[in-house]
Amino acid sequence: VSRGLFSSIHRNPIVKTLEAVMKLLLQYLGCLVAFFSAGFLIAATWTDCWMVNTDDSLELSATCRGLWWECVTNAFDGITTCDEYDSILAEHPVKLVLTRAMLIMADILAGFGFTFLLLGLDCVKFLMDEPGIKARICFISGLALLTGGVPGLIGSVWYAIGVYVERSTLVLHNVFVGIQYKFGWSCWLGLSGSLGCFLSGAFLTCCMYLFRDVGSSRYLSSSAFRKAYSAPAMSGLYHPSSQTATAKMYAMDTRV
Image (cartoon, rainbow, N blue to C red; front, side):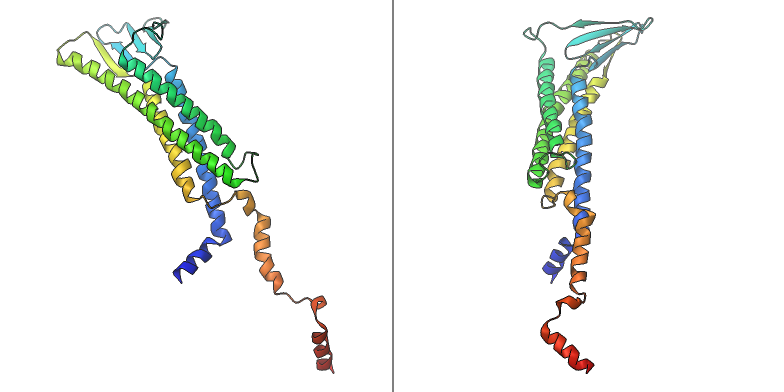
């Protein structure tokens, strides 16, 4: 009885409509989060404020260190001058090299996941007659975003740990040079973008898996509802033209 009740509820057009709406919401929410996450990761990779050094004693300048160059801003006139690091083939700290590699890998995976996800949205006129393929596209995009969040998070956390260790080493040795170490906004962008990739990937894989049997929402239009509800009702109506000869004979006998 419970199995029959569950199957009847599952076949209910209203339940199917709610499932289709939930599927669309998950798609659009995952796409929105993936868009901002990929943008945050790309911005974090190519900006210059991963670590901020502020001179507390004189407050004459503030230095921002990025993955590719270092910029110094004068506190009086606001002029910023940037110096690029040496060539990629030159020797660099492990923290810098690892963060570069992890962030570039995260950019590629997140960008691919978001671009590929656009083809799987129900609102995009691509493979409209193949809802199963579009669902697989969303699933693959979610896996790419989940995978992209891993190197992004590793690189951002590794760099943040390096900043903390560098500051703690000076404090441990009682070295005071009047410089305060802070996490820059680029580092926070990297962390936020990585967590956003995890979130959007979860929407597109785990949650979309729950609605894997739900077709595209365009199959649940108002015409489908009219067909679903009008067919049983019309089948029970009386049609005089469909009377058989025997029924007509009984009708004549009744009138006589």
